[in-house]
Length: 108
Image (cartoon, rainbow, N blue to C red; front, side):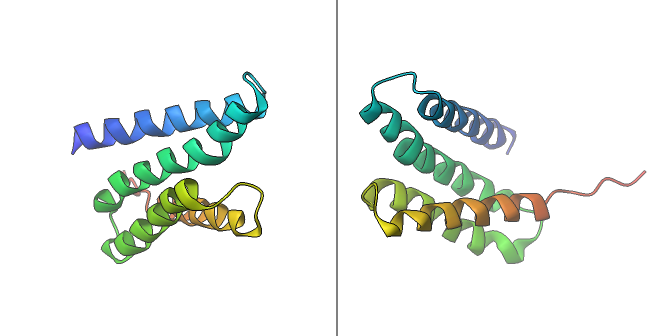
């Protein structure tokens, strides 16, 4: 479990680096678009897949898998610049909301 959480965290950090690289135009426009609009979503989706079985509320596991699938499939197959591209963002927001809602509560 701990190794899975570490892997998920590393993937999330790499995804954020890809997003930042695209935003700050570190590379050519083609590479920037690939990193921030494709690779980012695929990595975040994989991270959501790894996080899903670890959710404390088991009712949200399948929703997290759905968010992960939307991110990965959208990142791989939805062409850049189309109206369908917003579907990836919906998957991303869904996964983020599920992550926040399922944070463990610590009581003293």
